Image 1 (cartoon, one colour):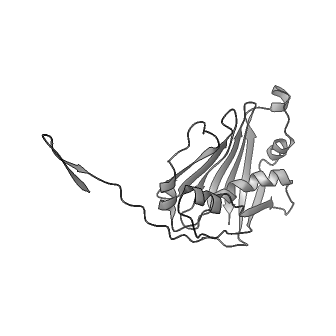
Image 2: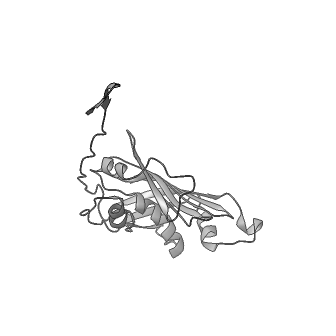
Image 3: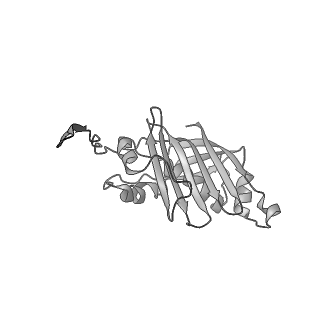
Length: 210
């Protein structure tokens, strides 16, 4: 707290925000852990009917509505050297940590798997430093993020909110918001979304069991 004296106006009390403690990061998950997610997929426009625009990858994703995928932890990046938003993104968020297969063991087509796996992978966060992560980003992303995109984060009493939305700055944005447990850093729900001038595709991943 700082006391400020202004001549002729009296005394004002200015409260500084409390400093954010340095993170004591650790992973709450292990390589080999698996998490089952139920998929809910839908699109706002049937592009093949509206504009003759077809995307086989998204059509394959829509066909997975109601199925379950298993996310397998394949790697955990080192947590040293994370001290700002840039290093947090490059060292943790942007490092692939899971691969996904269907619950029956069948493999997903590569492009489909890459999209589906990117959402839980980016949302699996280290524990022991959520207030620090929260201090790096605003509470919400803008309605249309500027190029190349933006992040958002917020600590709630029972979960941590984290979002990464990318943008081409013109007519498309894609990415995900997720709700993450405080105990082990695993997302309980993630919504991957791609919004384009012709269509919007949604993939909701809801944690079924771990």
